[in-house]
Length: 634
Image (cartoon, rainbow, N blue to C red; front, side):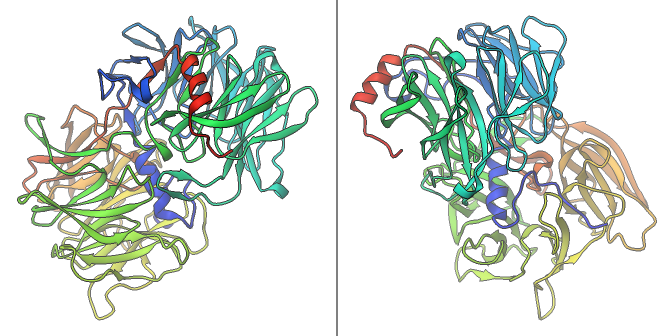
């Protein structure tokens, strides 16, 4: 059985783009705290207060809406959790200091409140469920097919919801439970792919929703190509129409407005509730709002007009850039690295430990303008290689070159390229395979490059194999990797070869949870099976091979001692760091930390502080902006 990797909902062509999306969305563990620019009013003078949940319940950024506010604006429900553990629905009373977990909601996503604010609904495990906020038993409303794509509970006690199932439209179900019925079907002749993220209008007259189109998204300078728009379904007549050709996840705001997500923004337009029509042109209301690749956004509006939103940007990108820090192993003290501001990820120390290769995303240019930076630790200088739209840097064993994966948007799938680590010389394309390839690591002797390679026949989430490419001989790299079989395992990620070349470490959820394993390498002819080390992901060997580092099931860096006398002996495991740092977990094979050659310091990626912002009294400002602001395309 080939070594396969679970990569979420990766598409087969824009491979590196999707990996970068995973790097910037799914790994976000936002601690909700003081606004990063405390003392100033965000978004051009709009007032507000900052919600500060306890750090033990960090916000989890998913592919759906992660926050919801009650109709009276008094409570906030949000999804908490780390990327390596289950989610949990939390309830926070605005103005109080603590968030309370709602029992029975492990694994929850996409929260929404009932019209009376006494219940909160959510999706989990193929079901739509609800639970009373005062405490009590969880009630299953109905079974669903696909993942959560928004729900809204109307005043007539009917829930309108959507899922990620193929060609899915809007569905409705009584709030008391029952069989769902179909409300809409996407019109493929008009290029519609799905109807998602519904919001029931006051009085239950109609529903606004997101129309997902079939065209491929283009992200440049944080501008969305118009792949999503806002539609309206008249629940009395059954007729539907397009209100806006750009944007998504619209909600009605008292006073006669629709507010909806743009590319990292919230925009607004006047709306006639009687005629179910927009009036005039849209304007920009809020900048720096967390929006997702599928046009979902982390905001919610109460009937009172109170707004809650998560600061961020297009594609789930954080408002402030991630940074690299050294963390002392014994004292756990952080030492910031004085690098220019970028979103950093996937740091890789050079073999001699003098430099760091790191993936870079410029927050001012959007999630899909990538580069590889080389940070000289002694000189404190950052050199950006001339490779563009690349990710996943890997050092060659001699420290002279960087291998990375690139996407050729108008040509073949992602392949491998290389450049001198000092930034000189041309970019060399190493492979021209018809299958997408991503470099993982180079063996310590420099002979083999491990790559993640899309299988020749597969296009699904589990159609990726571990390949081995030769780095020696006259042909150097071959176009097609030799697949390395791994017996009786599935859904693997994070493959790393031990310094002596005898053991392969990886993570898998074959047992039903993410665990780190070690097995002999190569596996052919060996009677020894994999050895489970611990619950976790992102394994990395110490330079001396006596320790295996990994991110444990709660998102903390841990290690297990390793002995080989002559067989592998796994010793005690223990947590090393007690602060969570950025991690993609088993969602994608992107290790986001490294260790110094002596094993005494860890190079970690530190998430910026992401916040929920509660804003009251912004209706007058909205009116002013609609009267005076620059108009936006519809």
